[in-house]
Image (cartoon, rainbow, N blue to C red; front, top):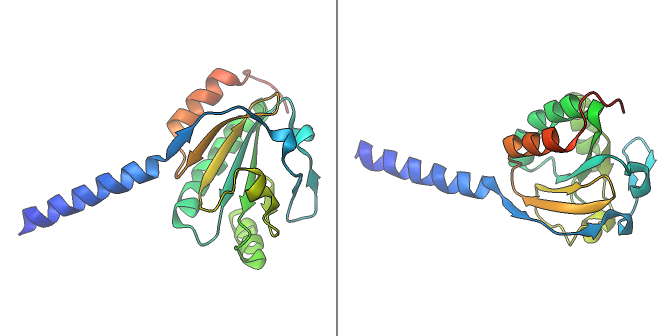
Length: 171
């Protein structure tokens, strides 16, 4: 009976890992067609303001366990690569409670811009995002180059950033 339970646990973990690995899609679409970002502190970030940087746009929610689990590694990745030209924008979903988003951002000392997509314009502009987490990569010319549904593969992300960002660049 113990072996049977162990087999079920291993099988469940394998399924979870496959789902968490996410779905990757590569496509070319200009990020300039997207709406501007308005942060929780009222700062406006236009897509054109991000030119010259690699931008990671992460759709998340305070009610999403995977989103919250990946946030510490997203913070560490941002801190490591931001001086070389990475920007991260965390977009809270329209159904997320604004007060919870503000509290979470403050409690975790999120170092990157946090946006409330209250009207859902960003979710629509980024291809009808409805689930979380969903992460988009935008190249320095403003083209959306990838989409990840599910947890970010941070080893792949860091390999991409190491190959794409200049060493020693100041922001």
